[in-house]
Length: 522
Image (cartoon, rainbow, N blue to C red):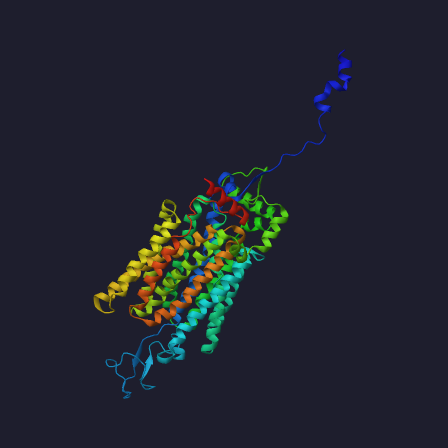
């Protein structure tokens, strides 16, 4: 009986009746934020190293942008002894109207572009024109590289390209034989500089988990302020404008050689481009470096779990047009553009306005840059406690109050000191806003169009920066009054933006729209 039972096929129903090919277990699909929180770590050793290395690019942007403060300054001048041509140190406060040969620039004609080409009196507007064209180049470059970093070049590729161009154009500027050539070279330098900050910011913050992203994003701008501090020292060591342009371009070369090889591409960019394997390799490296383990049965997916065909389609069509098509992101983009414009008029206007304060230029630039750093720290602490929206409103209105006060002050004696203090407090608040806007704008739109939207907002900021030099040229209390109005308007626009604190960082337009619709139901 036992043998007949063993030979009876029916007695093995549990084994012979089973299919020969058992379907493999489906991988567990997670969006990137969930994978970072669950398996990889939100801000461990890997992210810290990547964040610091990538954020060094902000110091490069500070060098190429703020070098104009020193290179285009109007140096001091002195009368030539015994000239007898109507020049005397006590009676003349400006070189306008003085006879040629009766005076000379302190430091010689090579001390600045103003001294080199006589950009004073009737030609003083040419200084503002150079600075405005630089920011015009930044505006165009932000749009171009914002699109390229979302599409074919990627975040790392775009950052590499702009650093190469910055190094080349910066060195060529030092050889400019005349004003027109100098003007054109500053424009093309602006074109490449416009892509540095936005590429570095997105590349640094995209691999960071959602609960740490705000504080990390605020920390990127320490490097920008640190770059201004370093530039003050470099400008003091290299007092001639040609030597200064070379010195301020060398760090870009060092960054390309010593830093770029150790930076990884953004896994989010790989994911939206349909290159999931490469994204997963980075996620495994993150988990391993952070002392965690990423199981084999877990894989990345877009937040709308799109199929491969859809992924490829979105990777190609992700642009500002897609942002404008969606009623959700369209309003957000327009508001972000307006705030970036007003904030930039103030931020760059304050930086350039130091020439009107009649103080030690190197020291004033240094103090303004140092004043920004506590603003970053305080804003970072308050960011996750009060949210993005209240801070965006509060920091701008805080600055507006002190700008209104500064506009009432004179430029002599105690009033001069008071105006300088109002400017420092004003830049304290506005630096926090300018910093916050990168984080806020990045969280308002999905990965597939993030750099395009940031590029658009950065273009608006550059439009404000274009206006800033012409505001500064007016002198007196007028610049402070303009800064106050801009701060007030920017805070009003921020009131209509949604809060993004603790919200997911969506990958696709569909994922964002579904997420917002689900949120609105509850």
